[in-house]
Length: 231
Ligand SMILES: O=C(CO)[C@H](O)[C@H](O)COP(=O)(O)O
Image (tube, rainbow, N blue to C red; front, side, top):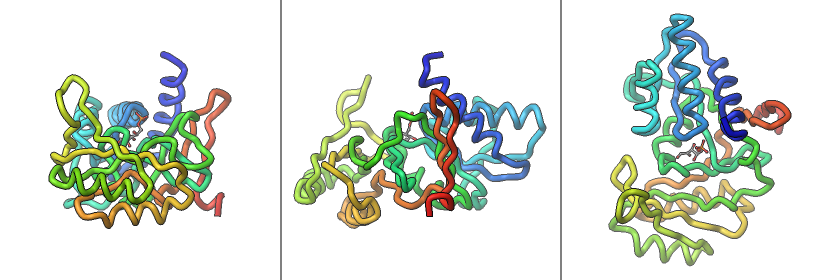
């Protein structure tokens, strides 16, 4: 395993150990949550736990099935705890997510959970959000007008293109992604709201004030930061 994978493995296991029998668990998307889903599946099998997962993407649905985790939907159950990755985390636990184009369902699941736990390796920790472009899921018809509005707001939007697929990335919901670079994001709460009121924008990847706990995999140790510790 290369170093980053070891860190992701460590935080995935740590988060899987937080889950209690009988819980409904939001299953995040991305390479870090793969480890969480795998370890959770192992615990369910070894300890005969009664746990249901609510996936945040086709990817996490498929991973849950591979790991032997039964799944359900938000229509049927409330979520006790959601575990998800992030692309950036700042000192007040605000996030940028959506590197995997799954942030719309992730935000719904993560914000619905009684507890939202973020797992990252130390490369994701930043002083100020904004090096990673903010992903916006937009309906395809809105491409030109939303781009123009984002430029007016000081952003540099780029349509995310597919790999091993010609043309743009199409999300699980059938939409486009505009990755939008902002020079500095001084007020993530404000920008998150501003972006979401643009007509044609379904959801943006700023998750301000949502995370209850962040588990950071470092070369030296695992660091855990709880929201109550920073207030
Ligand atoms: O927001 C996400 C997907 O939309 C991911 O959680 C985020 O991109 C982090 O992924 P990884 O763990 O692979 O670095």
